[in-house]
Structure formats: structure tokens, C-alpha cells
Amino acid sequence: MTSLRMHMIAAATALLSLPALAQVSDYHDIKTPPLHQIQLPQPKRVQLANGMVVFLMEDHELPLIRGTARIRGGARDVAADKTGLAGILGGAWRTGGTQSKTGDELDDFLEARAARVETNVSDDSSSVSMSVLKGDFDTVFPIFVDVLEHPAFRHDKVDLAKTQATTGISRRNDDPKGIADREMARLGYGDSPYSRVPEYSTINAITRDDLVAFHNKYVHPNNIILSFAGDFDAAAMEKKLRAAFASWPKGPQAPVAAPAVGAPAKAGVYYVAKDDVTQSNIYVVHGGTGVLRNNPDFYATQVMNEILSGGFSGRLMNDIRTQRGLAYGVGGGVETNFDRPGLFHIWMGTKSGSTVEAVNALRTDLSDLQSKPFTADELAQAKDAILNAYVFTADSKAKILAQRVNLEFYGYPADYYQQYPARLQAVTADDVARVAKKYVSPNQVSVLVVGKEKDFDKPLSSLGTVTPIDITIPEGNAKPAAAGA
Image (tube, rainbow, N blue to C red):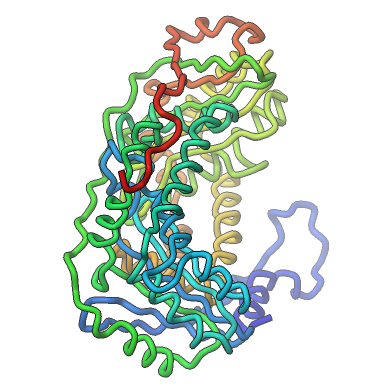
């Protein structure tokens, strides 16, 4: 165990080392000293002349080295008529190999060394990552560079990725929770990159040339944050990275993606018929909210979310599960993202025969969020829960490095996480009440129910006018056209 982990665990459990005191009858009477201030190690930051930012974090606990190139440009940058391109790109980038080696050849090469080189595309970024034993770094690192700079996107692997995507479309209505998640996003975001789903037509429209064009547009050193953690000397690693990337010329700067969000659905009741289930999946959701993490309201919103749905201590779980026995799990809150608007949403699952009762219970708890005072106990428990969990977001050097890369990517100050505990502790009950009124609108929510209506305890119309949602998969040629078509 590293000295970092030992220090953090010692700080987090300092209470246990206190000398025995006189017994108390109430846990509120237990006096505990403040925890020690934790000093986290920070990675070395280097910026090359071509704009590439590099972070290096030495970690000599194990003879491993892990690296990631995070690239500006992701699924939200894809045109609507090519929805699904990000998934095709993320798969075929690696499996399609490079201009010098096929994907199958890369598999054999890497497996013989217990190494990995992988690619992925998320909402706002793309990535190429590697993991390798220290002794094999100099052999595997050139593969990482080759995959990053010279992917081949071979037709057969692009076609395979498209076939896998269309298979996923054909099965997307099998899982009721998946249906609920998808339709909730559509209700909350409207037509938006954050709610679009691939269709047969959009997958069929994707060609190999589209993948090449995406790579050519975004994969340039000035759009990349490169990070390495592991058993290496930082000065020596910097020298290797400079030798590999310093001569790579700058390319076009990645455009700043507008956080495009369409018009959310009107408040009301929405229903998806799913007749092969015995449980209803329920969401309440509204858009036009969400709190960015650089918003001063972020900290109070975190506390509010914890009070509302922080596991077994949250209001929702206490009421809907413990008191009413309506659900095994329930939770949600106001989304807090780095650079895009989010939603307010709550999910719960309940048996079909208690669907309407469960929705009414959710409505009551949301109204209470506006009117029921936040107590000192709720505030203290929420802060303790958040801070106790926070410790474990930085209990390894790899996690600390990932945090630092995130801050760089989104343009947040380098000391953001160092300031987090004090700013969270400063939140008052009045702050929580204010953000609850500001970001939660109980009268503006859309209620989404996925289930079997004939088994409901009452007609769904007792909740209001019901708008059915048709989830029929649009017809189309399920077999994708060839990637080069």
C-alpha cells in the first residue's frame, strides 16, 4: 500500500485512535478533532511547442505504466444524420489497426506482452489509452503512437462495428430500464446530441470516409492532453514523449462545441407500453436546469442531492422504501456537469400494482423539497457522506492524475479539488433551500412510466392527461451498407 493511501486512511480514521472517554448516551455528544489536512501529490505539467499538454505522475508501487491521450471532439460533435458514428469510431479505430499493422496483428503483438492499447469515444472527447509492464514500454509505446496518429479504419472492421450497432438497435426495446433512460433523456433535452439515439438509417449512412474525416478534424497535438502514470522517471519519460510528439505539426483547433439542448417536453404524464413486465420504471424529469461545477451553487446543490437521495439516509429512500415499501431503489437529483446543462430527474422502480401510488409519493417528496425545512442533522449527515466518499476519489496517484486532466480539459483552476472540501463545508441550510427552489420545479416535471397499464393500481389518467410514446423502431435496412459505399 502506498504512503499516500496510508496517509489518507489514517486521516479518515483518526477517530478510531482516540483514547477511550467517558461513555455518552447520544452520538451527538461524541467530540472529534478535525482531520489532518491532506497534501496530495501533483503531476508534472509540460506543454510542447505544438500545443500538446502533457501530465506525468510517477508511481513506483507496481512495475506498470498507463497512458492516455484525451482528444477534444466526441459524440456531441457528430451531425444528427450520422448519429452512432461515435460508437463505430470508438470500435473500428482500434480493431481496424494502423497503416502498418492490422488490428489482428496488433492483438497478437499486445497479448504476447500482456499489454493493452484501446480507443474510446465519449460525449465530448475521444481517447487512445495504453497499459503495459514497465519492461515492455519501449516496445509497446510505438504502437500507441501509431494507433493515435495513423489508424487505418479497415473496411471489414468498420462493417463489423456497424453490424454490431444495428444488432443493438434491434434489441434496444428488450430492457425496460433502458427504454426509460432513453425516453427520459428525450423528454428532458428535446432534440439534442445528449438525447439522440442511432437508427438503422443513421448507421447505414456512416462510411469509412466519415471516420477518417473525424480523425483528420480533431486528432492534432494542440487538441490533445497526454497523461502518463506509473513506474518511470518523469524527466526520462518527458524526453521520450518529446521525441515522439514534438515534431507533430499543429492542426486546426477543435471547435468549441455548443452545449446544444433542444426544447424539453411539456409537463405532463408520458407512457410507454411494455406488456411483458411485472414492474414499472418511473422517471420524473425536467430540463432547463443543471448546475455547472464552476457555479457557486454547485456545492449547495451537491448537499441538496445527498439529502434528497443519498442512499438509505436520503429522504426519498426513507419515505418511499422504508416508510411506504414501494420500491427497492429510488434516487436522482440535479445533474452537475463540467461544461453542459443537465437535467433534474428522479428514477424509481415499483411493482405494477403500486405504480400510481408511487408516482404520487414522488410528487409529495418533491413538494416537500420546496417546503420542508432542511435540518441541521440532514445537513451534517450529507456533508459527512460527501466528504467521506470524496477521500476515495483521490486515494491513488492514477485518480489524482485523472482529476488534473479533467480540470485541464474543461478549463478549471488547478486547485479546484483542493478547494472543494472547504467550500462544501461552508454550505448552510439556507443555501440548500435556495437551490432547491431555484433548480427544482415540481410543477414542471414530466412523469414517464414504462410498464403494463392493465396491472396498475389505478388508471394512469388519474395522474393527468397521458401522452403515449411510440417506441417502434423505424423500419429500414437492418443490414448496414458497406463502409465504403
